[in-house]
Image (cartoon, rainbow, N blue to C red; front, side):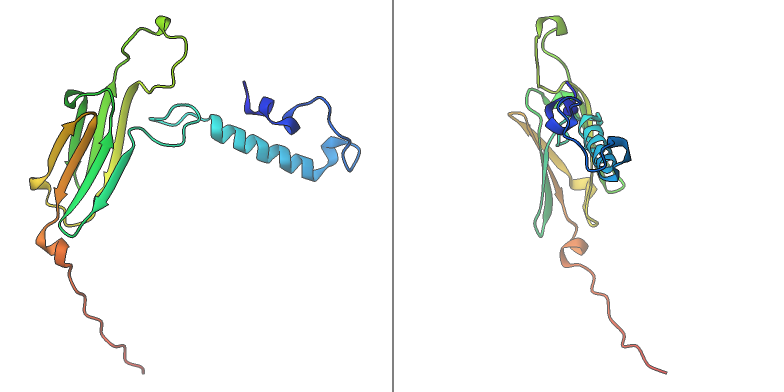
Length: 166
């Protein structure tokens, strides 16, 4: 079913008369039709790692930072640590994997569950000590801890010189 079928003004029947008498001459109706198409295309366009019409990428992640570390938590229910791969390169943490279907498609009538490959890339702040990164997987939740180096904790102060006027 198209989004247009759910919106009363998107249907062809029972149209009210237009201001100009002819619908094709009305710039307002033309603009409204274009905007309706734009929203319809946006909500129906499939996005990588998303189900049709979904608003959030999968898996969902939470990033928090303290003075000493960055912690990233990802929810990957129904998966094990063997199904997930973590890569840390050039200040980017890549989380990828694949969730396989538990049954064949012919047995399933309807499903809103996500199956397939996924990949999330998370830009990390400068000063992450990549050599000391740790990951833990428990009950479908992946937790990655990335300690910050001493330089990142204290920061580098940049002196400000007063500009002279000529």
